Image 1 (cartoon, one colour):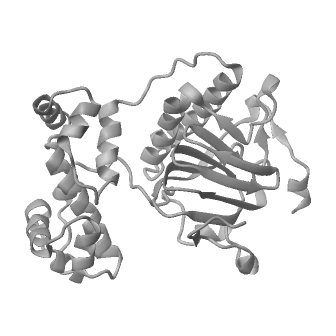
Image 2 (cartoon, one colour):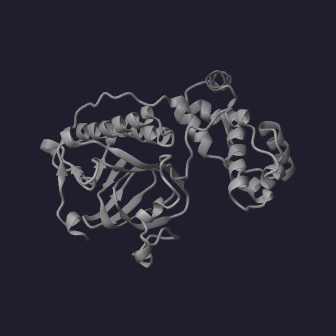
Length: 327
């Protein structure tokens, strides 16, 4: 570890000027363990499942509603111990040469590594949703919103440490439902169950959803599955039948017919690159933000991962180990 990091330095609240480098929302069904370096602070919010972590500062176990705040270090390990849904972000709290410094929260001391959020979980979730919604925009407004979200994140942490009411607004439950339809793509949609979760009748739930998003829940879910199919057809070499099956379509002919109806092109034409995906179609029911993908600012190039897995020590860093956590 470099001498600059071996002696931990801290920022006053007045010195905080944050930058968000990456944000993501991951739904992991397999057990995965990640080993890498951290050139910036790495914050992880667990919505469901269990996480484990081993850092130079000790071992940690996180349950739903917990926040982990990993500090810059030359090595770090963490992973989900069961199927999990989590948000994460990489950020710096100050520009160089203080980019590795950790905020000091006055009477509460340095930013804790492990924070059970309790009732403040939804407020922290809103912070990460801002990161995911804004990071790829690149506009001045988006940058300022993300910086404000970092300050809000620290405010929520302090409110938890102080054990007082934080009084921040919660995310609209309809948007939370919409995100769920965007991510649970292979599962069969059960409108009655969703209506019960919202404490609404089936008919009223469908009308309210359509009034809010312009589509019925079933049509929206189908469109979300087909958007993901379009992404896989353009970005991978998976056969069309495999893509259809992966997204819950048992019949490839039905998949092709729905794809043409909703997106205006045939899957085979999109795969061959003979036609583009119509812009007006991709805007219908546009996803809030992608899930299971790292979201980066527009200024970042394709080699950004080298910050986390250095070439000169490549053998010492393993991106993903599946099946079980290392002993």
